[in-house]
Image 1 (tube, one colour):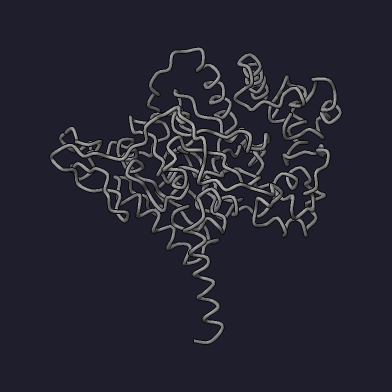
Image 2 (tube, helix red, strand yellow; image 1 turned 60 degrees about the vertical axis):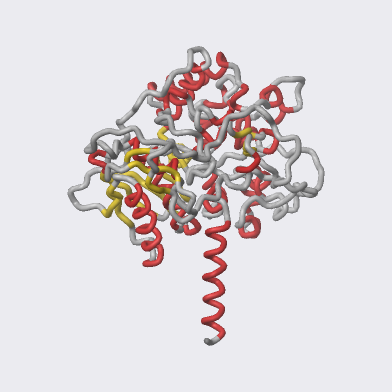
Length: 455
């Protein structure tokens, strides 16, 4: 083989190893090509937000979810209501692929669709002209998808770094109706969110979902889920942000290569895949699939399913615990917290983003911008649409968390930072620490703005 062929094969191997070795959230993060790809505002004209790195949500839905979480603390917790509005009818998930994808990309897309089709009763397939509701797979800002069917043609963005099977399986999971595992209402029994390692501007990405918005179908928390983020998701200092209560799973989360047993079980229950079968009680935590057989967790790493034995099968399931680790063999000490948090930091720095987007670059790209020395905190905007938010009147709302953390300069909070307990400095708690009264006022204010048609 000539040198060119050898070099090309070597590059292909390196790309493959990166795609299989990197956590899901790392691949999604590195798919962003502009600093604006990290902003919570995905589209100002359609009032679409981007949360948890890759979830697209309409502003009204986001407001409703936040309000439900606030009110939940005042009610007795109950099982989630079953919302079938976002289920794909007839178990059909049609999709179209834009011209942005190469033949190799399409192979990965087909492989991801086939994985869902193999283990569930869903038919993830290419759309026909008759399909009104469908998913549009397109090149977009990073990787992102709506949760479930939103009616009409809905976008599913796959940036170049996301065009590998495992990430596409993850994004299709969102389109099918899956949320992130670490956002489950019961997540605090299984993982600890290490707030001190999460920049305040990014803390909203770790808000858990309210019980009334999630139906887990009695499927236990799953460290191995393709929908779980890794131990260092949203970390900008290289330290752990998600610590598993069971230390054996610390290096497992975020590294799934495909659907886990519980992912498959949840999809089968969610879409009633056994609706044509005579119902049976499967042993060992198993479930009845579309072929009417009972399937349990398999010990085969290449196949998550195995037919259940007649006797009960013992499955490996995480157990909730309140015991915290006193030491960690999985988290190496970080002697230098000044590092880049994205592969494109040098590229962005060379394009002048250290000056044009100082808030974002100080957060993600300190090393490339030469801001590693200890110095007073620079008051800059982190959000990329601060002028847009200000024009809607958000700066004047009482204690609005996003504006206080992300749009300090635009809203004029910089001088208040240094005052005696007023302004931004008074609100440095995480989003989950905001009082119900304050948050309730914030939510109602957002609703009033929507009703008034300001957007």
